[in-house]
Length: 355
Image (cartoon, rainbow, N blue to C red; front, side):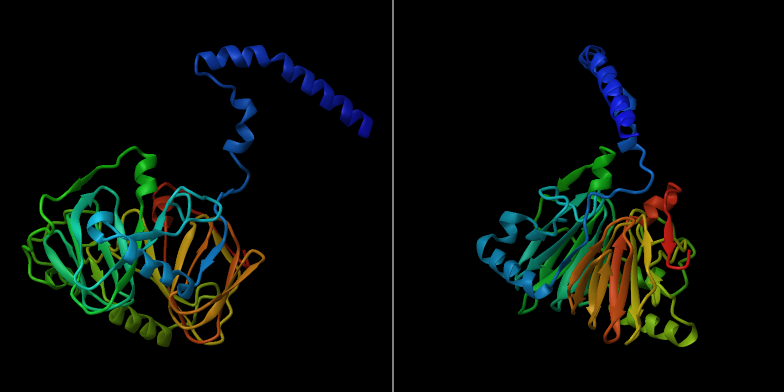
């Protein structure tokens, strides 16, 4: 049998060598044979080049502080350290489709106003009394707050406190660039003028009512700051009235209150509570997901790798990788992924331990 297999392999190799002149001539016309690459283009299962990874906040923070000594916000425009997936070095990607970084702003600093087509989220990790201004409205930020910068809106950031402010920058720039749809513009001044009182967006859309003449201007939620105190209360309330999901514990998505859809049109965002002692069933999906530990301690097992989790740690689960969560104490996790894009394109799949 081995001899037969070797004979067939030799015949196939000889036949392929005989096609080489054809391939060379076709290449000169910018043509290529699909049959040589089909297996890698249409795979039987997802094959993400990203790998599981974990960053302990205690290991990352010293680099953020050192960066402040090396470059100003004026020179950097955005002083950000990028989380590069070890499987995607040099590409500014934490998953193939998403960007993740830590931005730090020192007391008195302002990150100047600009706008871009890419949508951005800010998830606050450390600090108090810094602000983001979006489309002429300012919001103050606290740890655990989820803040949105919609596509093509002017925004700037400033720190009016006496301590550093650190947050996650999550962007869909790689999706935008895949579609060759990126635009960016700097504002002529350092900051964009404030044209609405602080709290206007929440007053208009944050209490299950809308003004009678309200007209949506975007698919993105008009609420651009989801305060953690309200999110944490929602998790606590839902944990009293229903059982935890076997894979996710108590997990809730951030939504646009105007239409009930995800808060952002290209990024799914969520917060989940895993009660002390909870051990999840195994789960995987096609949406590579970035997690940030908001509260508590625990562990995550991704494939055959186990990572111990502490407050402010960050980890990534690539597409179609089994993972399980364990809560040593009550554990609260913020997460974001490209799930909503996949759902809109009818691509999203998931598999639970019992499926």
